[in-house]
Image (tube, rainbow, N blue to C red):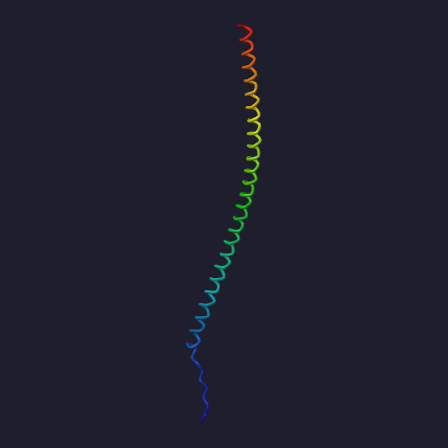
Length: 102
């Protein structure tokens, strides 16, 4: 018996090559999508950092405003008490003057 070597036709290699090329293209697409996704993620992380910083600044400003408001309220209360005392003193003086005049 003579041994025979079967050589596949070139067409038999075309399908695996085409599938490999298709897989390579798909892999490139996926890598590109991954890079874009990472870029978007980095951009979102940076935006989140900026938003957190603005929030921190807003909270600090709110604290300062609340403190200043408290100071102003305390000052206005003192002024109102002083004003009320002054009115009471003037009313008392007026009453004494009226008693003397009558």
